[in-house]
Image (cartoon, rainbow, N blue to C red; front, side, top):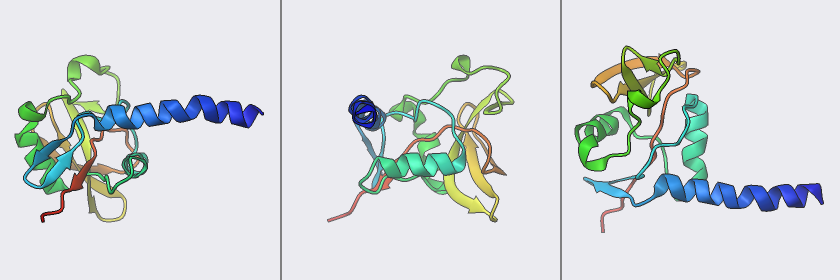
Length: 140
């Protein structure tokens, strides 16, 4: 009974969380982008899993896609602002808010991009950064 009650209370939150991240998507040159970021910073592996849980081929963007998203960030909107992030957190470095890409650099590192001031770098996959999901739109 306890498991059933937990499922009944958790499932609506999970469905709401998915829809609240996806929101009204934006099409950028054949790339569908969720309207919102995931609400909390997470490790690289957690970000990959979170995108996958959205279903329908959602994923982290590549380094090149993240750079294109950065160039269009004002059109897209909804990105985390450093005003809302604590100065003592590891995802708020040098007055920049960082996002994961799917582009690995070796086995332990991945490319990230700072969205406050464009800064492309590599970091360990174990840090806590923000993520936004994308998927490729099929051309007919």
